[in-house]
Image 1 (cartoon, rainbow, N blue to C red):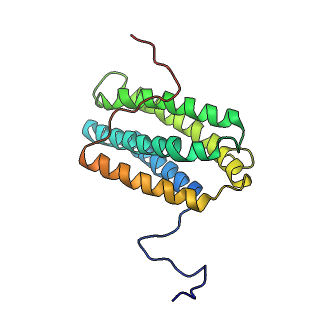
Image 2: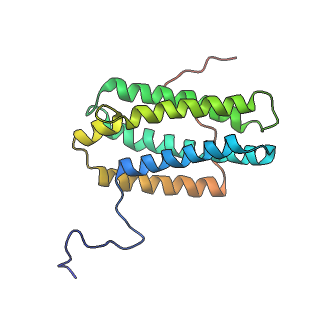
Image 3: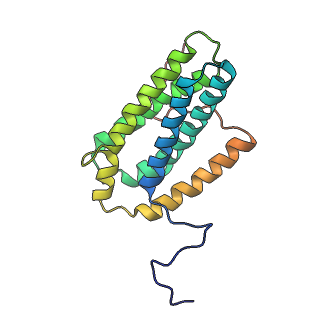
Length: 180
């Protein structure tokens, strides 16, 4: 079995995953959850969907900030990475506020809507053909399969943590929150 070709199928528990494909899959999942939220008229369902959106986004921002962004820093446009961190922090403020409330609260739907709009903008910038973060990462020759394995491993840890204990509040990385 040592003579298996490189393109031979991998064990089902260890498929190779491209980092960008994994991150784009996360984007599609969250987009779908926002659509479900907007279609719902039930406060309990909306609260549950908003919590799921926030959990998905906390996991996604964590793996990007711990693994993906450091891997691309210095290899793609610096402004692109800097803006991504700031956009994440803006989302984290809303995520924490949304998680502290429920769908019956004043401004709850507006907060989820603004979060959705912020995420759409962020995703567009990451996925923009030719000049977005992902296109720049591909052009830089980064080993996206190795990076994907790291992202997937950390994501699985965070998913398990979320299921057992829940995740802590999202912590802004670069934006300093002024005391109230």
